[in-house]
Amino acid sequence: MPLTLTVSPADALIDVPRQIRVAGVPPGTLVTLDSRTLRADGVAWSSQATFFATEDGTVDTGRDAPVAGDYAEISAMGLIWSQHPEEPSQNFMAEDVLQPLVTEIRAITPESETATAELAQRFAAPGVTRREVRDAGLTATLFTPEGAGPHPLVIVLNGSTGGINEARCALYASHGYQALGLGYFKVPGRSPYITNTPLEYFETALRWSREHLQPAHGFIALSGQSRGGELSLLLASRHPEQVRAVIAYVPGAMVHGAQGAADPQQGGWSGPAWTENGQPLPHLWQDNRAVHWHPWDGAAPPHRNHNVFLAGLTDTETAARARIPVEKIQAPVLLISGRDDRAWPSSLYSRMVVHTLHRNGHGYPVVHLDYDNAGHSINFPYLPTTQLERRHPVSGVPFTSGGTPGGNAHADAGSWHGVLDFLAQVRGPASRTEASHRKRAAD
Image (cartoon, rainbow, N blue to C red; front, side):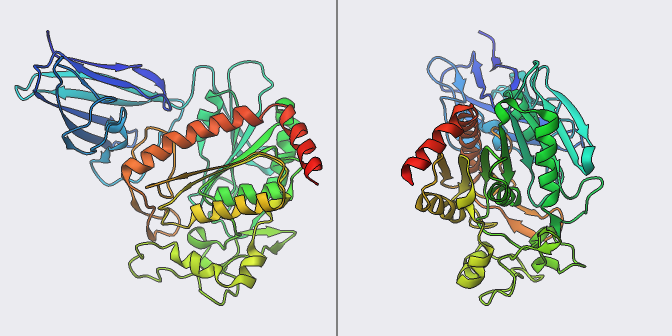
């Protein structure tokens, strides 16, 4: 039997795990599998793992652990998440999210017999459309599912990298949601920094979305990552009548200063991130008696730079002023965090949010997905998770996101399917009515 390598399905959405299987190998033979993905910027990402063929002459990455290579555990998609760039690169995401990421996989025996196969990962399902939005002063990109609709809406807010997370939007649209990627800095027409971002901009976005996108059952969810997670909780607490669900990836429970995305001419790292009615919101670094926000100050970053946040919370008076009043949220809340988050303590922050909601009789579902061995960069399923140290794209300061490649890969897959389950449970018209009844009964 000749050597064969199959990938099934060969072409599918990025959140679909694949069966990668080798057959036609003499039992007990070592077989090396390598993968290589060439990005549009010309940088290739690759991985390699060696397996011991079973008695039936096969290797299956979903069944078998490697005996050597870039990952060690049983993982159907280990060849993908264990990839490293072959030259310096910090970004694996596709420039055009309507085009697939294509990976070539090769099986090699000690006798140099080879077999190859391709694996295509898509962010956008057939029929998903992309449209830039520049109405009402907004800088956004709208992804719409196939079909007439109406569709529920998810507004996607990026973190301190700025820009628009089009890949996440496309994947939401692939699962039946309108997805509005809302840029609020580092996009055309907006500041290159997060400093002094007016909350009125997001109020405009909520109003425009309701009027022009007419989401099914009026359902608008906020989905934010890191600073976007902080922002999602903040906006939901200020506009509870408009926000029907919150998905906060590695969020903050406090209002923070501008930090790594700061304008150096407007207060730097300790300057305000958010304003309302022209006034800066109180934040954790504002006159904090316990710590000043200079965790690096030009020196090498600490092993766990989130310690500065823990120190900042010991100034209880400042922390109380900076706390996001999440008890005002009138919607289901999903929090996603990594217990080894080294950017800031997202696991602690998420627990603080859950505690506050429960203590105040929150009448809606609250879900906290908290992952061992996962850090700050919880992302999509089945993307490389090996870049644990990087430079911040705005400040250029080096930082460590935390977790292990395998732990982050587990969190990527688990959290995304948790998001889809959460949305499926709360997006209907009955969820808010039932929660209101429960809250009134509790009162």
